[in-house]
Amino acid sequence: MAKRGLFVGRFQPLHKGHINSIKYCLDNVDELVLVIGSSDKSYEFKNPFTAGERIEIIRATICKEIKKDTLQNIILIPVPDIGVHKLWTHNIDLMVPRYNVVFTNDTFTTMLFKERSIETIHPELISREKLSATEVRYRIANNRNWKELVSAETARIIEEINGIERIKTIYNINHQN
Image (cartoon, rainbow, N blue to C red; front, side, top):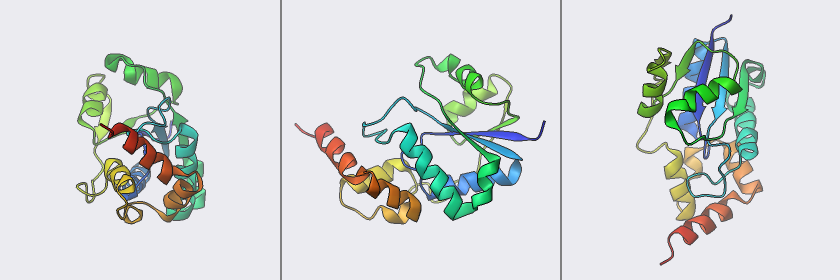
């Protein structure tokens, strides 16, 4: 089997830190399975976009920011939450092709895969204090410059699907007295 890696993220939304990590992963494996985590969640401040919207953003960004032919080495699979942490990695295994290594910087995800003796690699984080989906959503909700944190494709699609208004509305609902 060719070396296949697994990279799990919610990508709410995809940002430049994710893109850097995806490039790192692709440099270290023949194929990369991108798991779209919490695929059952949307229209929440922490998870404003649907799995389909996130897949569209990721595909468009990979084609423009990395290379169009890179898509042949990437498998995008939405995986819903199951609510039982101990079973979560096993649920992923039911939904994705076999893999040799997991790429993650999440301490909890690392623990769950390491308990199963699955190799985990931590891609280098760039500008972590600024490059987070939480920061992107916060900036959108508060009319601050968010486009500097995402690719042009991510920004374009968020605008096309009225994502700015969606995030602002959800944020305002959550912050009413």
